[in-house]
Image (tube, rainbow, N blue to C red; front, side, top):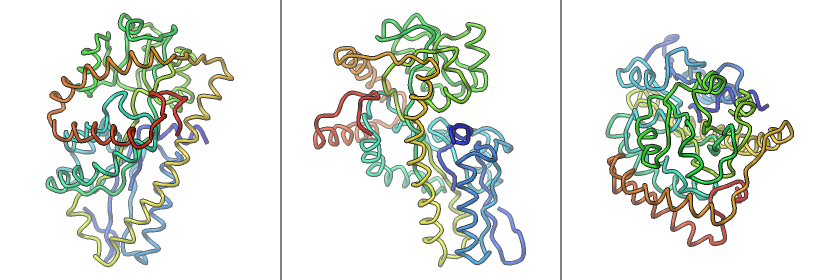
Length: 344
């Protein structure tokens, strides 16, 4: 199960051509490889769509990044060569920069808080996407991103001299880490293992499932117990493509793909925690943080928010996300700062 989930860890779901006469084909691109849990879910959604429409609508899936990376797939969708994409928080800002507001570090303390905020901010984000000609089929996430290092790291000062991997093609993330004073090295995700092996980097921030199944934890065997941020994502379809689907089917198709998303989402969350336990059995050391150190990370993140707010470029949305997160915390007191000790 772990391997199937990891293979699509950077894809959160997926939800203009003609097939046979009278049918509508929705072409969807995703990085999720064939055989992954997300690809299997898409196959299930495809079956549901075919059943609901009696074959009138076909969800045609292009997995494994055969149509390119997330940025390239977004460009193809914008040009009309692709109907839909299933991408992560790193790819979503290529559609609209406002979607970066869901990636604020050390803001969210639980899945429940994230869902509370996302459910309330989603209508605003969806209206922005609608103006650009796109419709969101699903919102989701692939769990929490943690820091994995070659030597134990507890405080921000201990991390600053360490060469920290960051994903290339995400300038906002790189800029944010530099604001923290971190020594970042932008590289493709595919270069993580080589970079750790050669010493080019000594720290990475990835979901536990990724660390387990690509075995990067063996090269970076210390995990700082701090939930840096959720790995958000969404399935987005061109509005023109969605309108090609007969109107009497749209609500049912939307409900079907969202139902699949909910089931897979729960599996991802459970597997993320199980992956940490499995890595500990194999030698991973979870670096515990006391409340004072957690507060230090939290203060440093908050100090960077004004600059991040400006660089994202959507201050009102940024403020609303932060306000909603604080509202949830106020109404649900007693939660810990981001870490594994936080309740799901």
